[in-house]
Image (cartoon, rainbow, N blue to C red; front, side, top):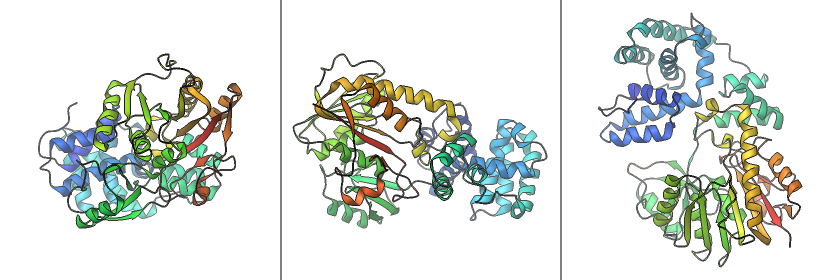
Length: 454
């Protein structure tokens, strides 16, 4: 299915994007392509389209629970097109107060007709009217029923609700679930290779943006209110869109000028360019990625950010990098492929695509990558393992297995390696663990430093 090229109708475009996501497409790439092809679309329609796509993907579990209560047929058995139409209507009724009830229902019924789904118009009309009548009587689970609350209010699949409950007390489990079904903040890393923070802050104020500094990342700012126009300095590389937790990884690596550094799973390259900035372009940096097109993203990012000491190369680290000499790197960052549970706010469809069994497969992949990289660290050198997730299988299970098989490495607690005001980010074993409900709205990350002994 191709993306639309006609003047955008927000609801029709949302239906098409969501349909493609169900077929395996990525929501952000599909939506970006659609908006770029239709730049003349009214800003209000662009905003509604974006809200519908990301909101429905985030809250699908909540919407389906509500629709199940009022549907004359079992909602789970309806055809995919009917489910999509009903979710689009239900999201407007339950989550968008600015859209009148009549418009939410009638426009969704009309959407069924526009999409040549006339046979579903009656079903859509009756179900949404029933939802409107019963919206104040829906049997939403109370907070004390934590698993049901995580599933039906926070819109998390059952297996993920269990994973969260196994790790956190009930109050924290609920708070994390609530955070994961909200929109993530827009966070920028100021690129000090091109601009000083004060000058960038002045440019943002002149453009009508309201921002605040990040609580932990010294180069980070959070946009609290957007200006009318685009962000200043995009073409000049003044900033990098990057979550605050992601920014902390380069600081934990602690790169120094003159060192030889490997960013092992580097694309799209935000951490790579941050490493270059922290060393003032005075470190030799090799960035690897499995896919050629993602290597090109690293190269483009390095050029945009003014990073002159980055070499990007394609390699699949499931295979040993025989072209690299043993013990040749001072520091290696392994931001490994993972389940991405910590960034569900940014990739909302992931919660519906992942299964519990995927975690073990990903953990096995992470272990293979670490095993292939361990020989490259020089004695006294550092291996930083980081992932944007919190599952047991991908965190300490991987780390402990690595330490058991590689006796030359030790876990280096971070307490003495980081500023004191970062200590709330550490767990009992000295690993960094961030959560959006606890730590300045940042993504959920896990990171440990593994030091190779001499």
